[in-house]
Amino acid sequence: MKKTLLLLLSCCVFGASAQSKIDVKKEFAFAAKQYEGMLKAHPDYSKTPQSTNKDGSPRDMPTEWWCSGFFGGSLWYIFEETKSPFWKDAAHNWSMAVKKEQFNTGTHDLGFMLYCPFGNGYRLTKNAEYKDIMLVGAKSLATRFDPNVGLIKSWNKLKQYNYPVIIDNMMNLEFLFWAAKTSGDKEMYNLCLSHADSTLKNHFRPDGSSFHVICYDEKGQPLAKITHQGYSDASAWARGQAWAMYGYTVMYRETKQKKYLDMAEKIANFYLNNPNLPADKIPYWDFNAPNIPNEERDASAGAVTASALLELSTYTGKKGKEYFKAAETMLTSLSSPEYKANLGENNHFILKHSVGAKPLKSEIDVPLVYADYYYLEALLRYQSLSKKKK
Image 1 (cartoon, helix red, strand yellow):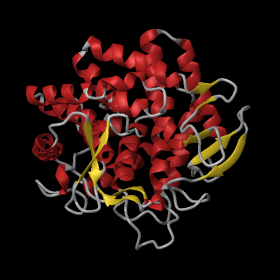
Image 2: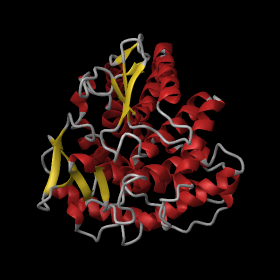
Image 3: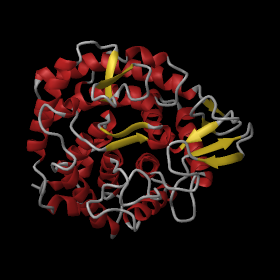
């Protein structure tokens, strides 16, 4: 999101000289037309676009759902590219639809829910109301941090465990970093370091792959290392690897501590060098799924990874060009008919072929709202990096 870092990213040496292979303006023109249909199909602001049901009907979710902020965030990205007041108004309306979630202390996902819409909105408009909403929301998120454990609790309970922490949680630290800088609250900054450090210590295998869920005791000691959405406890769930890569890239940006950059690169290298990664670099839903190559792809994991790699490429030396080219391949794939919907189809989502949680028989080979969000974010990052220095 404003993690887009457009001005900073455009200063990258290799990026400045790269020749764009993707027509970003064309892709945004399509996104705008597709989302015009989405807006017409969704007049009720209490239900946010999420996916497609098994019968082909739209799957909408209430604002307390963890994905509720992505649609508003995507609208801000379309406004950023088009500069059209139409999209500014639409983005504002769909951001305000989730305003009440600033008081929600029952979820760790307030970064997704609030920072994606309001963070982008504030970056682009400096609307003070957006800032105030986010500062309240950040305090709500911080209530889920137990200093005795040293991590933000994800779910309130999983099986018999009372303190589960999922790798996805790394994505919400950017919100707290913003709040720490904006409010001057050093404790929020330290909270991010504590969560990231404990995750770095406990969530990863020697090869750089991540467990999905670590369940802790009241003193912060791991009790179990399991999965909830991946193929098995020992497998590498694709979107989890993407969340991890993105999260530690942000950690390096915000702290400049090399251990976070090293972790982000290690995750990226595991991902890109995995023998089960297809040539188009859009992964199967789990790198260890049992029936590869006859397993579903996850475009959402590809979109998150592309966006993460583009930022990561600006922080690394020799690997930078490799990461950029891999992200370019991912975006080229996602922009092709294989993954991009036809206009007016796919319940007006941009991308096809994502997987939410196959073991739970939920959202299998369907569009997902966050796949669109990170695809648009990655396109903006790619456009910035591909511009020649003037």
